[in-house]
Length: 364
Image 1: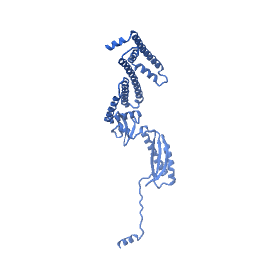
Image 2: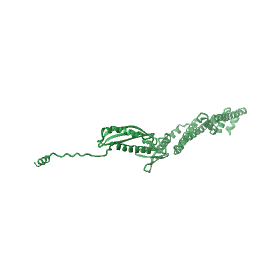
Image 3: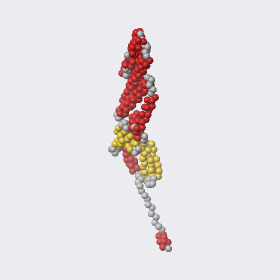
Image 4: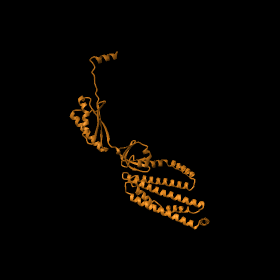
């Protein structure tokens, strides 16, 4: 009461009128500027600005608090009065806090818009990303409001050095205690945002292979070809070498054909062109090469390389089967024999009298 009495005593009626007029003028001006800007941005929305005008209009309309305008207006009006230092400081601090809170509200709106946009872009191809985006939204808000709190404390004259140091120590302690969990959480965010694989991809991790069923905040689950479910820690998964077959654009195929050593030279020389003709006759293939590669233990080996222009495994197997059948048919027509493991044993007959001489030598 004494403070209020001293304020009233030290300010004339004219000062109160001026202060009230300034406050009303500032409040009215802020409301008017907000309305004009919102109307202009609403008209501008939909034009070739990538939706930025619509976003700005939404922030002004729904994320701007009138209480902030009122606090700023009161502070502006108080500048026309003679106030004690601690009262003037309190009003200034209230205005600073109000402005920082308003900035935080706008930042929160931007975070909501960005998270919603990212979610719409990715949820169609990966429904499992919803949980990761929820985590990202919470983490972003925590960071935003922590920065706002520290800024407010600093601007109202509170020393935040010890507070920041305490937060740092506490953060290190918490991070050490839950480092595995945090590692998996950040790995989940990396998987969601960087997309090394998505649900439905067929991947190979080390000696394990299967189809991705679910990407969680801590683990990723894969259904193996033999039927069981494989559960990987997200952090361990990202530290591994991942082979994603779903993103294969084309498949390279290499196979060998062995023919007998008794095959005539002319037929050997014709085999590469014959195989090329067979491969090129198949749809969705691109021939690369066919060569007489080496002399095997029991066969003359030809190596063939071609590409299947679609990644589907069943399509590849159908094409390979057709090629194998046609090679078998054409080799039969050309009289070319396939080689199979054989051994040739040569028997030498001893000359007459050699056995008796050997026996006499052993007897002596």
